[in-house]
Image (spheres, one colour):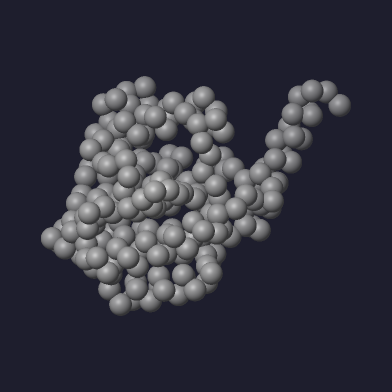
Length: 208
C-alpha cells in the first residue's frame, strides 16, 4: 500500500468519524484556547475580532457568534439592556482585503425579563459542555458559539458545529437566530413574545 493510498484511506476514516460523532453528540463542546488551535485559526479569529467585534465590549452579558464556512461572519451580544447585532458585508475568511471589510450594525433595547430568560437558556446549555467521545470537526457548515459573562469568573463558552435536525442543539441555534431577527426588526425596544418564551422554557427543561 503506497503512501498516497494510505493518506486517502486516513481521510475517509476521519470523515466517517466526523459523521458518527456528529450524530451521537447533542450538547455544546468546549471552546479551545489560543494554545489549542492552529496558527491559521489564531490569525483568522484575530481578524474577526478586529473587524466584527469593533466597538463591542469584551465582556457582554450574553453572546451568540456565527462562523460560517462560505458566508459572512456575524455576532450578537446583549449588554446593558441592549441587544446588538454585527454582520460582515463580505467574508473575512481567506480574504486578503479583510481590513476593509464593512460591517452592518443593528442595536435595539430589550426588556430585562427577556434578558434573564435568554441568559438562563445559555447558562443551562453551557453547563452541559463536555468533550465529545470522538473528534468532531466539519469540512464546511457553520460553527456556533454561545457565551455568558459572570462577574468574578469571566466568560464561559460552548460551541457546536452544524447541529443535526431535530436535536437540542439545533433548537438552541434556532433560538439564537430568532434573537437576530428581533434586533433586525427596527423596533425601538423588543421583548420575547409568548411563543418564543415557551420554546426557550421547553428547551431549558430538555437540557437539564
